[in-house]
Image 1 (cartoon, one colour):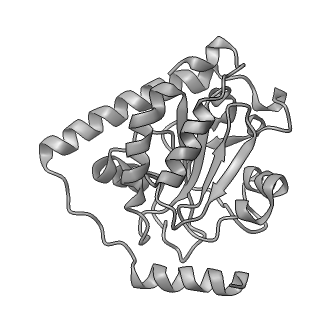
Image 2: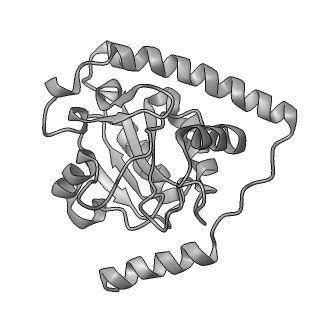
Length: 229
């Protein structure tokens, strides 16, 4: 399939399967999710404040980059030195938005082993992330209880794309370029890209799980400070 047809196929799917807003959670569930998110954000603020300056990082690794944060001032990739990281461009009004649930599931399962997810909200594909920072925060908290780090809304394709995505393409080629929302890039404990997964690959799929567990099995040479969570 040509690249243009590939993009068109996703666009058609996005229009046909545009995700309806989930039903509001019960008050007790909303309160539980809000409390979990608040605790996670507080831990991230501490961890990110202590992270080394990305400007001092090895330029052959993802640690050289920092994203503006959704809940935090920034999301410095140096905070994840020695961890396995899945970087995912997200959207709130996409047919693939329910993948948030799967992302949170694998985050809960593997986080204690040194696994991180960085969600990167992007409005690049069919305008499916139009909301403000506050609206995205509320959506992620109430509907999915997202506790993994989230970047602020970011360009992931085109001339204005975040430098991380330009670097990723240089490292592994076209597979690193998102064609739609919920494209995934897996980074190993050494800060180098292992591989990318396209939008259609579910976070909980055997393919993704195998890649994560294999990457986690690699011994980290990162300093002890990177194990703070």
